[in-house]
Length: 492
Image (cartoon, rainbow, N blue to C red; front, side, top):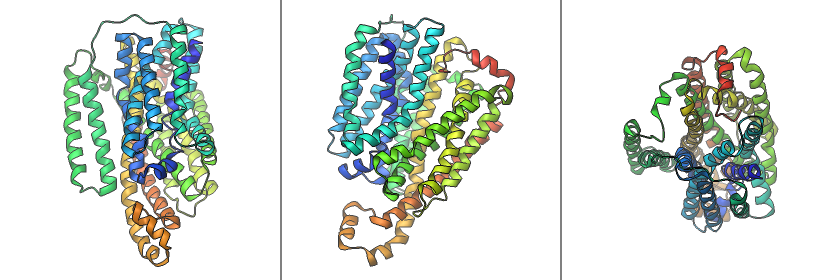
């Protein structure tokens, strides 16, 4: 029962990172988001979730894990309710950001509860296997669940559904989950705040640049502010007694290179999920359910790639799998960069998504194992958590960067389409354009496809940077594989 509660919490938290993706077109219509600003609905959650994971785990150690676990879920539930009730864009964004805070408090504590609830050995290994399966499958499952809810109920229920689930977990947690002893120590609030504010400001600068152009004064101010905040973060972490991000973990080039590869692949992954969802619904006209089903082959491809990686790791070594996986991701993005408004699902979307899924699968196991190689038992948890953090932050920053490219390419295509739109659009379509600022109908499809093609071209560069990092920075050898497998703290 304890495992069921912990796994349900993790599924709810991970699923919420993607469950709204399918509902984005409905949210855009209901609350009046622009396409570029719509990325913030996803980014607001993943940003605070990724930025505060380490602090959330630390809170469980210092204050008691069950207590912190319950508080995180309650915050998540309340913000889910308020987000579902939102009437203005800013209300939804605030709720999503605070939802991410609740997730960041509950998720690392849930994993820690597995290790304290189940004795070391086969029982704990099985529990960790269940936890890992839920973590890996939750994101892809979120797309399907989001499609079903949006199609059969309303977009607001992708948030409301968390309320009864969370309340059931809280009600039974005190009955089936034991409280842990508090550990002495202190919070690195300064490090957590400067890192989260710095990255948030950086992402907002990218969003402004996407909407207004690179010369926008507010965007430039955000970039300058982010530089100051992130510099302050490095200074704080260097002298903190208990840093939220131990900088010593970055001194090893294998681990540092692993984090860079994870950031690059996560940036591409978030872009694929975001833009392909919009393409299949807004251009191909898929229903929400059909759009969710359209992503199931990606899940299968990732699982196949992960299974292949486990077989190939001993003979091939981690480095070759990292390079191969990153190159497959870059090739898939180059394929997607050919997309246009006449592309279909089978000829324009399915093939590159399968290639990308295999590439991601090859890296899932490999990156996790390499991230914890050579660390002391004391730092194993931090090294594993940092991989999760780089995944979340890489995704948010990458999506913001790709959205900037999307905005530039989309504006150029809109200018090209404008004469034809003015000459042939109906009065209703022109009225719609005046109210939203975005071209409707087939003209809007052309703009969306052109912006996506530009974004995926940029994603080729990002994935290529990951491949180059794996090739020239990472040095882990085949002989290290057995050592890596013996290291604790990973979900494998």
